[in-house]
Image (tube, rainbow, N blue to C red; front, side):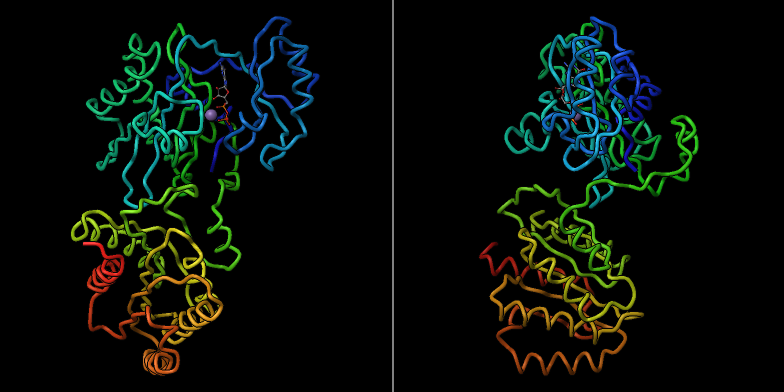
Length: 428
Ligand code: GDP
Ligand code: MN
């Protein structure tokens, strides 16, 4: 569940971070005009649950009450990237004397490590900084998931900011406090994301000019105190931005999570592996196992791209759509699949996969090699169907390698599949 900016700022302030002095939250331009003094410099900020408001006209500066009212009447009722603007946060404008930093804490969904990311090139899109000037970003991954940021890491992160930020050197101690407190807030409130962008350097120390907090829905039951603090009685429906793949999967009726950002730039030296597992548990296992085998045997050059779960008893069409989604997903080089048939049938699974490959090959659509294993319910009929299918359409199924039964464990199949894909690319 994502918090609105005013809520996130109240949380950060509660944890000892400096935020701009709020004038209030408003639904009408006339009220804004009344609340802002004649010579007061204020920021008007659209309270919508989406980033990039600055570029879309959702963050404006006014030099007094009259200008603030005029801007408010222009902003209210508009849409920012599709989201209607119904309320505005008005706060004292922060006068910056130095640079703007980025400070973010998040969790890597592939391995559950907490990542603390800082950059002295804040204010703009941090993904753009990562693409164009990656040397301006320091990312520290913590594997032990401590409640407090270890002192050595806090010093390293703050030092990186202090060196890179205009006016930062004199505030190294305060920057360390900020990084530590954002991290502590992330842990205390069971966050998925706790982020300040920009953190502005001012004469009286760093100030969080923008704040983003996304709570982990699975931790909400522990956050009664936070809900009371914010005056919330029920959880809001999580409207974090789904990716195109996630929207497509939701429409088809299966669970899917992208592990890569939508604008991820593919590393051409790595193999990107899509996963069609049997169920949720196997889905998590596969992510871990593909990453682990990649690290141990392939020099860390293997990237799992997704989590997926069909739920019990998918139809042939749904199985086909699960593979279609990954074949259509440009980064994917190889698909690893496993059908551990319990509730679900191997027969339905293999008909879905074979049907998908045949249709795509005949239509000239993109396919990538598929390796995997099936065991369990309806295996005899699934085996018979598979053998006949390979005889009848060998070309369409040439890059499909499905082991039938328990001759090998999945770890072996994953390793052999990656080897096959590496050989195909001519990689060592
Ligand atoms: P976002 O675009 O949705 O992330 O909204 P932000 O709150 O980050 O605002 C966009 C940009 O407006 C920031 O990157 C800053 O450059 C600028 N900004 C926002 N608030 C202030 C402020 O109080 N003072 C100054 N000087 N700039 C601000
Ligand atoms: Mn921002």
